[in-house]
Image (cartoon, rainbow, N blue to C red; front, side, top):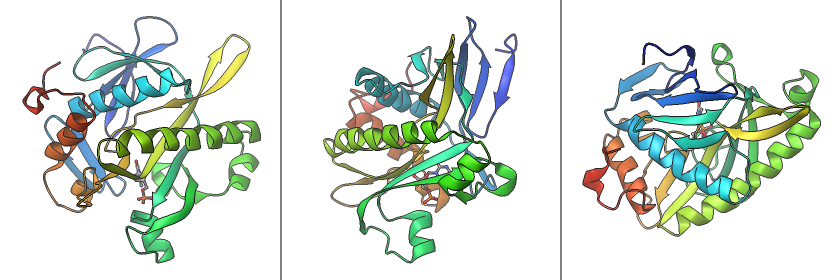
Length: 248
Ligand code: TMP
């Protein structure tokens, strides 16, 4: 691993140079952080679970024509991805009130929103990822109007598709965060889904009990994080046998 050139290290993942130009290797760490890394822990096996869950979701999205950076999983902790220029936005889609929208707007957690709401945050750790409007995004050239249109359409399509996939296994997709990138193909630039989709970046509640099956277990010191992620993977059919969770 040390032979490879490290391109970037984030809080939960590392990007290494890929085997061919235009590719990278995305490595999933066991680090869990919250509140802009003020809270940190190592949760053994989390990276393996997120690698598998994100592979499953990105693979399905690719198959319905949502362009993503994902090419294929390489091993327990790594996947081959296309190199993209990350658009500096965190795009949050909400179906049910929870987290920051509940706090900011005083909407009780669990209330179904009148429609799906898409929010944008400027991806900047020093500033604590502030919420921004489309006006800021286009005025400061973080993304073009065309890219924002693409992002909105893709985010809503992803929401519809994933809501269905999770509903089918008794899970409510409360909200989630997406990141997008620019894929340069000759003269063409395409907006594609990047990063990961996993219980680190989604709120997932059991449909019957509303039990949390996501990173809120860590944010709220509830424990049982890897058990919850394993439950998500098992329900999605990624693991036939939950005991095999940590196999490649
Ligand atoms: P929020 O309610 O804290 O704004 O979070 C909305 C969704 O975005 C939730 O599913 C968790 C996810 N999220 C991230 O993936 N990364 C982050 O840094 C934050 C703040 C939220």
